[in-house]
Amino acid sequence: MEFEALALLSHISKCSNLNYLMRMKKLITVMTLAAVITGATLALADEATKVKPYPLKTCLVSGEKLGEGGMTPYVFTNDLQEIKLCCKGCLKDFKKEQAKHLKKLDEQARKEAK
Ligand SMILES: [Zn+2]
Image 1: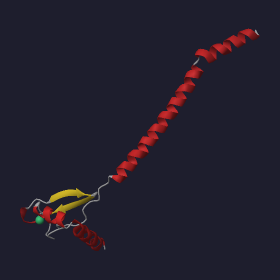
Image 2 (image 1 turned 120 degrees about the vertical axis):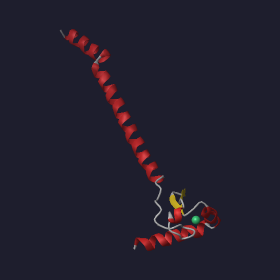
Image 3 (image 1 turned 45 degrees about the vertical axis):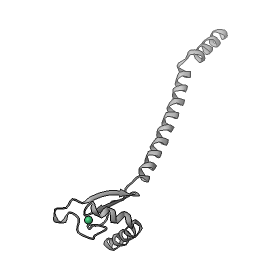
Image 4 (image 1 turned 180 degrees about the horizontal axis):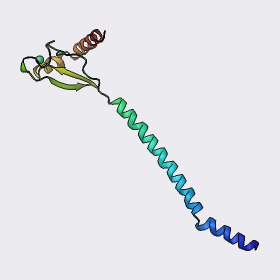
């Protein structure tokens, strides 16, 4: 009787679902952890690549209203900051004095926020 119980026990632990279940549980834990880490990394990456929208309605270089006179605004992203210019021609001027224009953008954005 005792022997039978022992044999049964060893049988259970050898090929059993118990073992399988525990392995699955471990696997699920690992997978959940991986998913959480991946999710967090993605959220972080998302945060890091979020582009700030251009806050002004005027060209950063010329100060003209965007889309005025049938011109197509030139939109690009500079260092996660969206920049809109009244035309592509202003891009040259922007690049020439990038720091100055970015400072201007900052100042004007603050003024518009008020
Ligand atoms: Zn322009």
